[in-house]
Length: 123
Image (cartoon, rainbow, N blue to C red):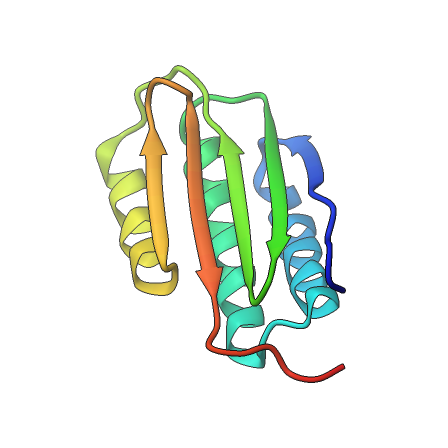
């Protein structure tokens, strides 16, 4: 897939939807042709980003997946609630470990992450 279109997902901010978020993220990464390790990283980043967003008091978690050449960008809309720092510190630690970029933009109420790999496998 050379020119991928962004995909937007909106799900209730409830733990029951974490699997749906993970599965869509992994599927998009596979369709985009990301390397196997990066597919797993995208899946984990999507789940941790979802947890982070839910902790900010959103009723619906909106996620924009932006597949790119050998990479996946994800943007999570954040709520206004000041979440407990313990909830977010673990999620941020995991995101920082698995993502190439992690940015929480308080002004835009958005968490942005990027997962990339050295080279996509041939399709």
